[in-house]
Amino acid sequence: MRIEYRQRSPAEYRLRSPADRLSWVVSAWRWFVPATTVLLLVVLTTAPIVLPWPALPALGFVAVFVWTTFQPGLMPPWLAFVLGLAADALMGAPFGVSATLFALTALFVRLFERRFGHHRFGFDWAVLTLLAIAYAVLAQQLSVIAGASAPLLPLLVQAAVTALSYPFVVLVCGRVQRRLLR
View 1 (cartoon, rainbow, N blue to C red):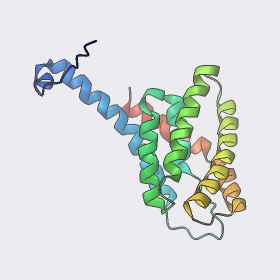
View 2 (view 1 turned 180 degrees about the horizontal axis):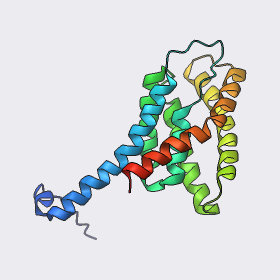
View 3 (view 1 turned 180 degrees about the vertical axis):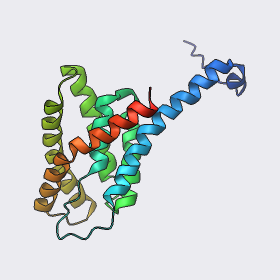
View 4 (view 1 turned 30 degrees about the vertical axis):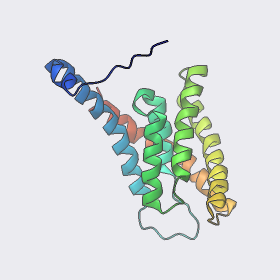
């Protein structure tokens, strides 16, 4: 049995028509918009606000949920993983915790949408609330595995605040989608 492998030549890009080249650039731009939105919301989460409890919502997590719900093709699990790595680096969390949870969130939402289809705002909010609680519990467990101490009660408070931030993130992502991704 003989297996033939197709080798890509560097000339393939030059052989594309200008319309195909433009289509490729536009598709890359379309991934850049949700990724930038998630990163900006992660940076907003790291705002220097001193509180005794981690009461700042996990806006990056909510943004991954919202973008995967709005545009599943623009937030694949691998992109969510990369954004989670950036979130870990920005927030000083154990490396890989947010990356794993962002990718699992994107994967869960894709499977959930495939099974149940599109639904109303309230239902999505309830699903996000359950996911935020699961996110807090899994973040605590992964942090302990990574060697960091992470009490569960403050993370559950953060999960509640994260669930309450859902309308704000939907508003931001919806406006970005309407303005930049027509």
